[in-house]
Amino acid sequence: MDPRSILAVDHAINKYLSVGPMIGTFGVYGSAFDLYGESEFVDEIFFPHPSHWTWGHVVVITGFGVQGIYPFWEFQNSYGPLWRGAARGFGQLYAVYVLSLYMVLQWLSCMSCRL
Image 1 (cartoon, rainbow, N blue to C red):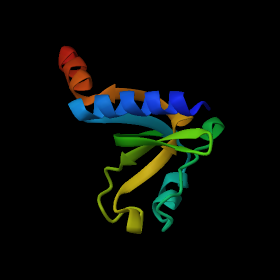
Image 2: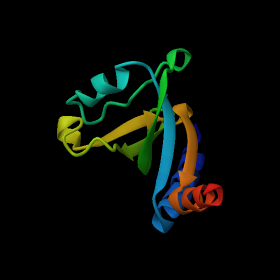
Image 3: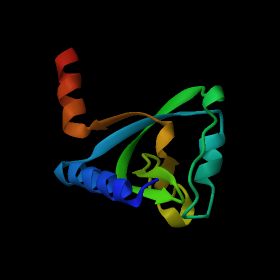
Image 4: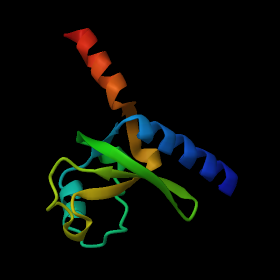
C-alpha cells in the first residue's frame, strides 16, 4: 500500500472522528470474540472468519492504523473497561471485515426516520 494513500485515508478518518464518533459493525463466530477479549496482547488484531459468521457486533470506532500493508480500525467495545485486560475495553479489527461504518449523528438521524 502506498504510504501517501495511507496518510490520506488516515487524515480523512481523523477528520470524520473530529466531528463525532463513528460506529462499525462486523460479524463474529461463536466464542471467537470472547477469546479475543481474554487476550492480554494489547496490539493483537481481531481476525473473524467470514465464512462462519453467526452474529453481528457494533463498536465505537476510535482510530485507524496499518500493520504492514493491512489497514485496521481501532475500536472501543461496549463490554466495559475490563474487556481485554491491559487494553481496557479497546480492540483492533482488520478494516476489510467491517461490514458497515456510520457517523453516529448520521445513524441517529436515520433511526429517527423509522420511528
